[in-house]
Length: 226
Image (tube, rainbow, N blue to C red; front, side):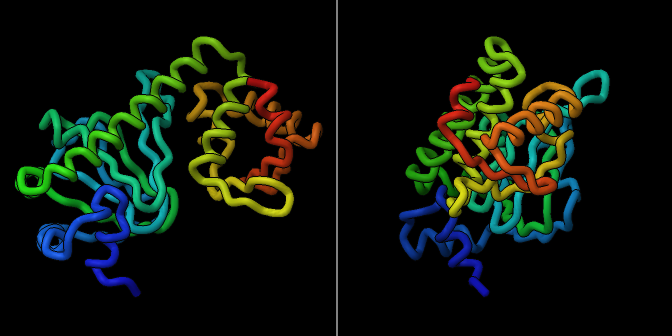
């Protein structure tokens, strides 16, 4: 079992801090355990803290007026989320839900603000996180606007492989158990459309489907659909 100090030190946003600085974080961090599908916070609730994933996976999503779910991010161990409420002091702009049993660290905004004032490097790390998220959002908007559904599915599979992929003998296994509906919610289409496209890719030996696990067999062919 890792100690709290080791957990914090292994989180990218805090990487490179001195021992005394890690101690400061340990003094203010709260660690919580969540069971699969539990909600961490709901869209519209007062934004009170910044979160980071110690273990497990989290999806961040918004609900459309018709009740459809639009997944914004799938996050893994070491990722930070809800960082925007530290900046604008507003409500949570989306809902966060664990996809599997997870351990989550949180630092309340007032405590984190004091920490950032004393450690400007943390602010730079946070800025890098926010910049990366902005780029991801721009890619998703571009895909929805310019690509057909085959291209959007291919693009999302490649992005998931980059962030959650494990190299194996056959290719790249996406280490993420997503339902067809969740994948559709990431892309902005219907479950039936995603199921059909995945089946076509599977028949063409571009990917292999094993229930909810997807392995990319031919990355070059998959990219050709983008």
